[in-house]
Image 1 (cartoon, rainbow, N blue to C red):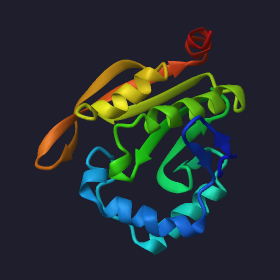
Image 2: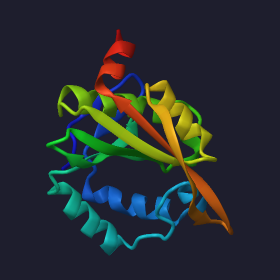
Image 3: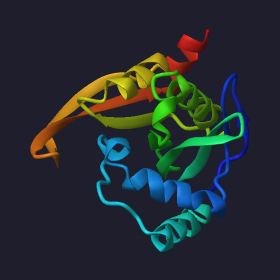
Length: 179
């Protein structure tokens, strides 16, 4: 499903719209943007439309576009929601390279996390990231996630094997950190 509008200090999470799909296609065609993603091949506009249609009706995910002022800069979501065990997988992509390193991913993770625990009543969130993706690790850790493990040689990219780092955040840890 498409998420509700969440307003932060410097960014806003809002539902993606069909007119955003060409921008998503451009991001996924940029090897620098997709360097640390599990998806390595660009999508066509038709594939993006099919993805959008499936996400809009999927009760096991919540998806947002990330905006800095009026500029679309990324996407974030809560995926594979297990409503019985109250856990989910999370992810974030900043597709606009000149917005990297400015703390927007951290703010998106914090907004998404608050929604997951306060509105969806989830108990546990998990995320994973290429070992080399220090920026995402910082965003997750600043939001309370902790590293819980490593999958060695889990992904082949750019001619070599890469480890995947696993992160988790439990509701009580998040509440304790929030004060």
